[in-house]
Amino acid sequence: MIVFRGRVVLPDVAEPTPRDVVVEDGRIASIEEVRADRELSVGDRIIALADDEVLLPGLVDTHVHVNEPGRTEWEGFATATRAAAAGGVTTLVDMPLNSIPATTSVEALEVKRAAAEGQCFVDVGFWGGAVPGNLADLAPLTEAGVVGFKCFLLDSGVAEFPPLSDAELEAAAAELRRLQVPLIVHAEDAEQIADPAGPGYADFLASRPGPSEGDAVARLVEVAEATGCLIHVVHVSGAEALDVLAAHPGVLSAETCPHYLTLTDADVDDDATEFKCCPPIRTRSHQDRLWAALRDGTLRCVVSDHSPATADLKLTGDFRTAWGGIASLQLGLALVWTEARARGIGLSEVVTWMATRPAELVRFGHKGRIAVGGDADLVVFAPDERWTIDAPALEHRNPVSPYHGREVTGRVRSTWLAGNRIEPDDEPRGRLLRRKPL
Image (tube, rainbow, N blue to C red; front, side, top):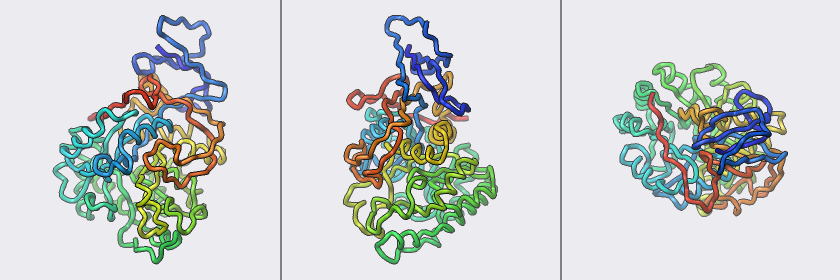
C-alpha cells in the first residue's frame, strides 16, 4: 500500500483538496480525509507531498505520432514514452501514420505492437487508419482493439496514408457507427489549400486560410448527422471551425493543441520553420477564441499532436519545404498551465481538458481522473515552479522545438504508472492497451 498525502486535484472539485490517496495493487483503493494516525504494515509507505506540490491524475494524450517502425529516427516508442512520463503523460495513443506500415490493417497493427513491446514507459493505445480501399479492415481492426480511426480530407503529407473522398468518408462513418467507435478527422478543405507563394511564414499562413477549416467541419456535421457516427475534429486552430462547432452543439466533438493556445503568428519569424504545423498557428484573436471555446465546452480536449521530425527535415528555413509538425509531448502541461493561469483558469479545468476528457474519448474510463477503482496513474506537480525550456535537455529524440528558451510555470516532479514511480533507468512497465468493446 502507498498513501499519497497532500493537495489533490479531484473530479468536479474546483481547488486542490487535502486528501490521503490510498493505492493498492496499482489501483486507487480509497480517497480519504488526511489521517495522521494511519496504521501501516511492513512495506507500506506514505508519499508526503511538499507544500508547493499537488497530485494530479496522469495526463492522457490521444494525439501522438510515435513514427515507429519505419521512421524511428523521427521519434520511437522508447523516447516518446520517456518524454511523456517526464511531462506527466501516463497514457498516450499513437497515430496510425507516419509509421511504415501505416496502421490500416490488423497485420500492420501487429507489426507496430511488436515494435512497441518492451519499450514503453507509459501505457500506449493505438488508432487505426481509414484510407481508400480499407473499409473491410475497419471491423477486424476494431476487434483487435484499436480505439478508433483517423482519416484525412486532404493530402496527409505521406504517400502511404491518402485522404478519403466524400463517398469514402460517408461509407467509413456509417461503418464506424455500426462498430461504435469514433472517427477522428484532419479537417481542412483541399480546394482552398494552395502552395505558398513564397518561403516565409506569411505566405504559408495565407496558403491555409481559416475558412478551409470551417468548411471542412461543416461537411463533417453533414456526415455525422446522416450516419450517427461519433466524429471528432482534431487540432482545431481557428475561429471559423469554432463557429461551425458552436452552431451545431453535440453533433461533433473537437480538440485543440498547446501550440495554438500558446503561440501566435507574431511569435514566428519568416524563416523559423520549427513553428510549421498544419493547420497553421494563427493570430491572437483566434487564440482567444480557442480559450473561450474550451471554457464553454465547444472544444473538449487539449492534446499535443506531437509530430516530430529530424532537424534536416524541419529546419530548412523555407515553409514550403519544411516538415509540418511540432514536438511538445513533454511540454504540454507546463505550456497550457502557464497560459491558463495567466487567464485566471484553474488547474482543475486544465486536468479536465488534458486527462479526463481525452480518456473518455478513447473509452479508457479507468484513467484520467483520481477516483476509487481507477488506475493509480499519478503526477506530482509543482504549479508555481518557474523554469526555462532547453530543447536539447528534453527526452524527445530530436532537439527541435519552437519553445526553446521560453520560460514556463509548473513542473512535473514525479510520475507514477499503476502505483510505480517511472524512472528513466528502470525497465519499461507500460502496457499496450486495447479499447474495451461495448
